[in-house]
Image 1 (cartoon, rainbow, N blue to C red):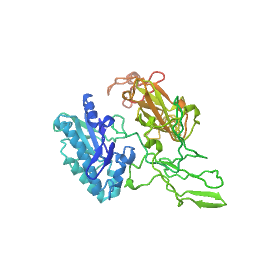
Image 2 (cartoon, rainbow, N blue to C red):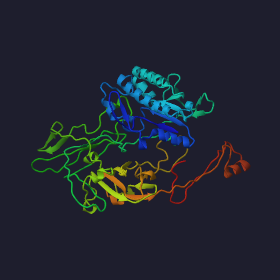
Image 3 (spheres, rainbow, N blue to C red):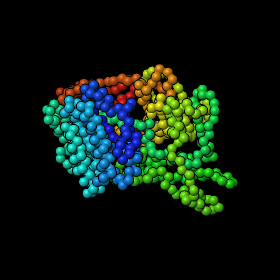
Length: 495
């Protein structure tokens, strides 16, 4: 089992101390001990860089502001932070005797991740950094092999993961055949990600917002505050074309007009040369055209800037924070109001799936969900899978554009609610909707899991293939096949 422990979960840092939260969902030692109870071994990927489609590739934002730092290269401030973190994780594992040489279950460790292509771009400083990282890891004396992923020039004794590389441990107990896998393109390895409030985005900058609080007794879906807008529009870039220019007509009134921009970065940069220097958000220019037949550049006018949302600072997603403000009764709130917080209580003691869709109609647009203060994660039901679905042709080579399904549907509908988060009654559901939606379409359903299986072995032909082999000449080997199907109303989610 892959276990990734990167900088995720770090709360603060000083010159001498790194503070990391290792309680509750972040209890790494407890998690590894549970793996042992399941009879599995662990490949502990310390990183600390992960990529993993996560903010800063797993690095904390404060690391960017360390004086003189440059990420993932021969840079002393970065290497000092990396060594401090790696040493802390290794010492934690040693103290609990979790390495295989101590009688534990950790049989492999990984330092860095997919650095080979980066080394090629950065040159000599990157080569020096690779050699330093390898020596630093080996000198920690874990007693188990260290590996690097996508690192053809990994210094001895570091093992570079490559197709069908064979590893044998000195204990003679374990022999592994490692295939080329990463932490994100794989079905079997499981990666522990310490989600801190599930924020897969960066800073939410709310400019010149006017906040209203109203008082009402809570009965059903409520809202604590709303933003006054004369006219609002939303636009976003894409993975292929992240830079976006947005233009739209605006109604103006005589006198002073106010423009408010809410910038939401869905994830900070996570990969690339010196990605800590990249910029995101509204970079300008901002201009107003058609005013007296001229273009008025607003870029250099005085703008006020606020980081974060009021609801974030009030912790409205938490049990205590949600009680600190007055909420409006749902029937008094306009539907599809942007930048809206909703809350509701429900009764349940079963493991549940949360749906942000009602049947096939999206009721919510984009935002985040919390259950009893725990983040379920982000949802974005309005972001549809692009077109390109066609009957699947299994001939020829496979690529990511073949055999596409579920085009024009939301990329995700169901969100797992762990049973351990639920109470028999009084469960708090909080939703922050960015674009506007109808929370009455949100549903909770009981999860029912079934399994279907088939036993085959390498040289076992199917019945049809056996008949072909018996009565007709077969020019090529007939491979064993297993045909699996689910009962009505269920889908195969994993194999």
